[in-house]
Amino acid sequence: IIKVRKCKHICICSSFLSEMLTGRNPYRLVKLVKNYRSHPKILEFSNQEFYRNELQACAEHRKSHRVVGNWAGLPNHAFPIVFHSVRGQDCRDPNSPSYFNADEIVVVKEHIQSLLSENRLGFGTVLFDF
Image (cartoon, rainbow, N blue to C red; front, side):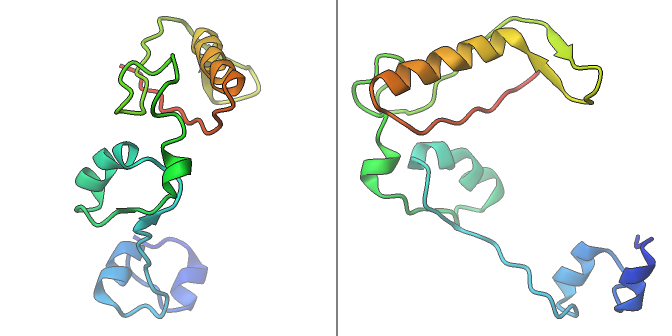
């Protein structure tokens, strides 16, 4: 449902998704399918679940496989993802709507310091709250 008057003014009278799917909108929807940063194993889940296997791992091998191999913090050297469970407490700054977990921050910092000490840059986190 479009509630923004400016959208109606430019003839977008239905949902953005509907407009994109019908092709009536002059703006085009572009799906980015080439990833130039990540190791193929990191992309695998998203590729299968969200991209219908259209996502292409295009990163240079020397960049995407930088950590794979002999980093001591990697449990499986063929799989460049670390799952590290941390028990802690969610905290919130009174001036922010976001939560953080100080214990998780410490663990991520330790992993980053370990990577940096071996000149292995490139680090990302995904946090799940169960």
